[in-house]
Image 1 (cartoon, rainbow, N blue to C red):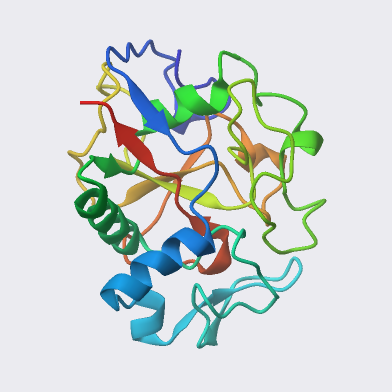
Image 2 (spheres, one colour):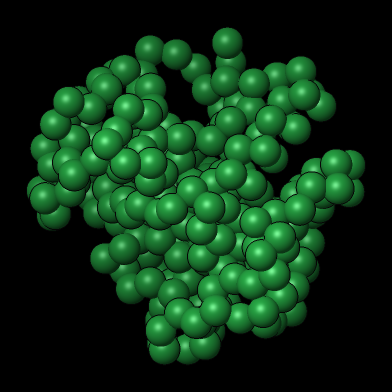
Length: 235
């Protein structure tokens, strides 16, 4: 079952039958993985082209800051940190490159696939103890952390709650009335605003719930709370 009664945007709870196999990343895509793409293609992210991104210190509002991008954050990061400052367009180009390099179909997840993987068979707000599983507002120190440092869910997936928001293929709708029931992405919409899932290190627990989702402009590089989790299609 997908959705929740907790918010009108998450209604109605509805059954989705995913009648195909797919593989989803054990972790969020890392700086190491993303840098291989950049080095091979000389691709410039939207944040690099515009020479700024949104940043946040502590609990204050987001502010624009010059020269912030995936390799230049206001804190020290390792190659095992999630790649961030990634727009939806950047994410799609990364998937396109990976697919060409591997000969496999690598893409962003649909919302249905993402929620199915995040829940890992659970029906509660979270797939486990949020303090053991997630980096969020009250334990993150207001920064991202290397992937796979917290406890995974029952399917051995890390950071599906918190650390960074994860882009999906779906476009935003006001609720799930008319949503696909076969696991595919809901790409037809009145506005071009891709969905993000999972919450991030700056958010309180409400935003990290398995059913929660938000939208963003596809060109938005909402600083270092915005990343990627990859899917490999088995077809």
